[in-house]
Length: 370
Image (cartoon, rainbow, N blue to C red):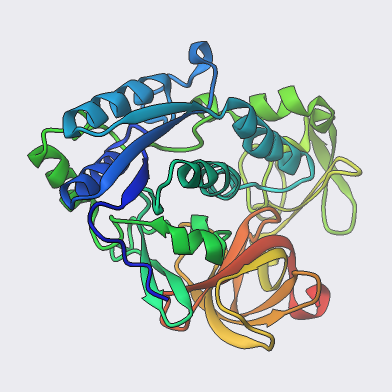
């Protein structure tokens, strides 16, 4: 099915106030599309993040407005504060309380940008919603395909694994074939006010990286103290709350006198226990996933390359679809620190096309996790 858009078609551009989304809107305008810019207000105006490098901060709305004015497109600010709080921030706190390590950027794309905003774009009569993500959308024989960006250092396909086929058919990613240097050059050429603006970093709603402040405020029960134990249950120390830890963590355990360095292997929220062990115990070869989103149909085991963290390269694996939206992933070689709450994303054997992905619920050696 051909989803090529003709000049004059209306496209809603999601404008965060950063250089990537600004160039996205500008390029579409230059290509002759009827572009409408939309910026989401995710926080009360008097409580927006102000630290340098944060995205979605109060000043970003002003930057988006100025860019829209300079390139000559209408611009609207939509109040998505309550939706963002419920679907992203509260979910983030709940995930940490359950002993997981969440990825709020995935939830934001899945539940806010590609759900609520996409619906708004349709209501405005747009034929597509465009964003500044570094991913490629390729027309395939069965509809649009999601591929990794041309610039591997900027690729954001891991964070978009939950995008559905229907959403992907409607979405556009104009920056997928570019690198950041090229994008900034276009911004400078167009004299955009944010051409030199620093990239957003970390989690937008976490002030100065202190995520525990958010979690403890929303889920104070998760901050209860407990024991630090080894694999056999022997108590080695105490902690102030499991929300201070994630699988693979070494610092902050305050343990000394051990024969070798200890790392967090597992979090037990029911008993408020942090289970630790040597680095050799961190490796896992089997992963169990829930809520798998498929962008290519599979009903039998298939070879793939998978990513278990956004910054890790994809590795060889065998993926087996299971009942009720689950899947099992057998890695060709063990990976360290695979944490519940993170995502495992499947790519085709050449590492380009996203085939799907799901949320990690458990990991271990083949016999233990099967």
